[in-house]
Structures are given as C-alpha cells and as structure tokens.
Image (cartoon, rainbow, N blue to C red; front, side):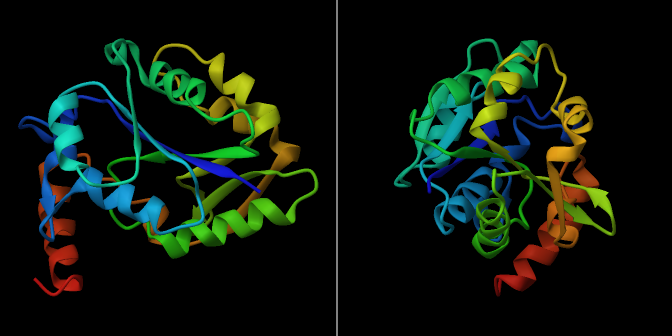
Length: 202
C-alpha cells in the first residue's frame, strides 16, 4: 500500500499580509515545515511539496527534509494548477494521494495515520474526508481511480464538487479541530501561534 502526501504550498498567502504566511515561524519552525514534517512522520510516502510563490524561500524552509519539490509556474491561476503539478509528479504505483494544505499546523503524523488506516480498510479504497463536529476538513484522501478527476479541475476550484458528485464513495471520520484550523489571517497566526509555542514548550 502506497499513499502519497501532496502538500500544496504554492499560494501567495495574501490574506495574512506580509511576504508569505507559510514562512511564518510557529514554535521555532516555519508553518510549511511543520506540515511537511507531519507528513514525514506518518506512513504517507512519498511526500511531494508543490511550490510557486516565494519558491526559493519555501525550499530553504524545507531544507534537509526528505521531500520532493515540484514547481508550479502557473500558481496564480488557482489551486487546481498546483493539484495538477503535484499529481503529475506522483509515482505510477501510488494507490492514492492525501491532499494537504500547507497552512494547517495542527495536523500530525498520528492524525494522518488514522486517515491512512481508514483509507486502507475500504475495498475499494474510499475518498476519506476528516471532520470536526460534522463539518468537512482537510486533508482529503483520494484513491487512484479519482486522480484523473482531480487533474481535470480548473481555476481556483477545489475538490468540493467532486466530493459531492461521488458522495457514495466517501467515508467520513471525526478527527477534531486539527482538520479545520488553517491560518488565513494575522489574528489566527497570533492566536494559534502562541498556542503552538506553549504546546512545544517555548
């Protein structure tokens, strides 16, 4: 069983202000590095990180990690372009892919492994959607048979419509707030950054 991690880190992070929210340090580590390290601490393999805006800085933040960097020169054209770049870089033998957003610092290796186990338990493998209090979150796990549909998305359209279209193929699992917290504003960075620092002992 091989499920890849696809970390989307190409966006400009404009909603939080400053150069790039993914480079903001939380507990002494860049946000994007925290997410990549969580993927590496799980059973997901390989870990592919799609870069675009501030790509050299993102690469520097990930220095020393066993991740594959894939450049998306068309990142300004929306999330779908990063999905296509990342999916095209996956090994043919992958049974599926977990699409991770690089601004979700509370995702851990343990959370990812819980989702991997749910993915593995299905026959055929389902689309696995984590939830928090019944609301859908991220990352979503996609079996290989749906990767072509993901490749066909356009613009800044995410995979929400596909999840609805294939509702019978979806398995949800309640995880908790880790799958719903993304850091899109300066306030969120400040509030949750302090919380992460306390958890890390800083």
